[in-house]
Length: 397
Image (tube, rainbow, N blue to C red; front, side, top):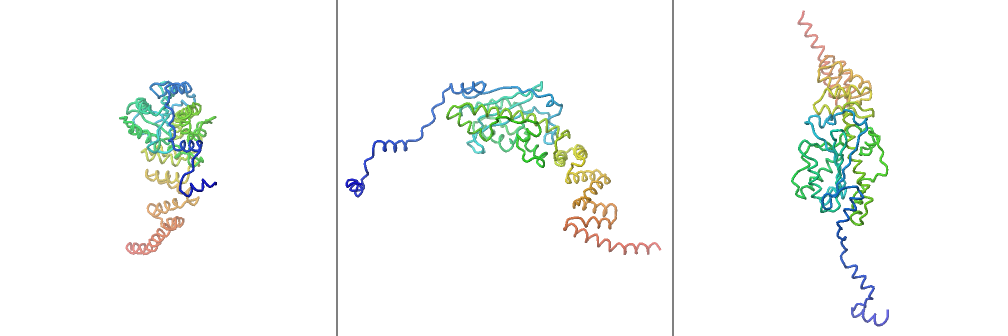
C-alpha cells in the first residue's frame, strides 16, 4: 500500500476501481436474465420429435393403439374386484401423469398426462397430452375432461388416490375448468396390489408388479423421478430427447395399468398361479358383501392359507352354523400352538358341548390374560358341579 492509498483509507475514501472490477460488480447486481420467449416454431419441433399433433398453441397430443396379446384378452371382467363389484357397469379409463415436481404443492402441475381405454375390438386406445408451454395447461385440462366423458366413466390409476387425482382436481380449480375429475368412481390399483402381494414381494411399485405379474421388463426406461428434470431441460435448452423418453415411460405406465387391471381381476377370482395373500383377498370379498366368494378363496387356498385366513374361514363357518367345519380349522391351528384357536375351542366346549374339563384344557393354551380369566371362571364352575349333582340326586330319591 502506497502513501496515497493509506491517506485515502484514513479519510474513508474508496480506492478507484478498475474498469474490469466495476463491470464485474455491475454484472453481479443485474437481475438474472429471463429465458427467451418461446418461439412458436419450438412446439412444432417438439411435436415432430414426439410424433405428436399440435392442436392448439403449445398443446401436443399423441394417439396410439396397443393391441393386446391373446393371453391378455381372456374373458375376465375387470370390474370383478372387491372395490368395484357393486358399481354399475363402467367405461374404465386408465390415467397417469408426469409432473413438474414430486410434491403436491400448489405450484406443481402435470406437464404430461396419459389416458387409455379399451375399444370395441379390445384394442387399447392411448391418448397422451404434452405441454409445450405453461400457457397451454387450460386447453389440456379441457380436452382431458372431454376425453373422460360422462359419469359412466371410471378412473384407474396407480397411487392416483393420493397424488394424480388431487393434483388434477387442484389444477382444474386453478385454471377455472368447471368439471371435477375427482368426483368420478376411482380404482387405485396400488392398494389392490398391496393387499394381495405385500407379504410376498419386497415392494409393490408399478414396475415390480409389471415384472412379476405381466412378465414385462422395461428397457432404457427413464425413471419417473427424472421427469421433472426432463421438462426443465426442454424449457431451458429446447432439448427434446429427454422429454421423448418421458413420453415412452408414460405410455408404458398406462398400458401396464390396463393389463394389470385384468390380471388382478383374475387373481381376485382365484385364477392366479403366483403366490398371494389368500387371507387378505378373502377378507376383502367378505367386506364387499360376498361371503360365498370369500369362502371359495379360502377353501381353495389349501395349505397355503395363513393362520389368519383359517381363523377367518372358521369364523365364517361358525356364522353359518357349521360348527364341525369350524372345529376342524380350530383343531388344525391348535396343533400349531395358535392361541386364538385355543380360545375358540375352549368356548365351544364350555358353551355348546358343556364339557368344562375340555374347556379348561384348551383354555390353558390361551394368551396369559385370557387364560387367567377363563381358567378362574371354569374352575369355579367345576367346583360347583359336584354340589349341583348331589342336590339333583337327592331330589330324584
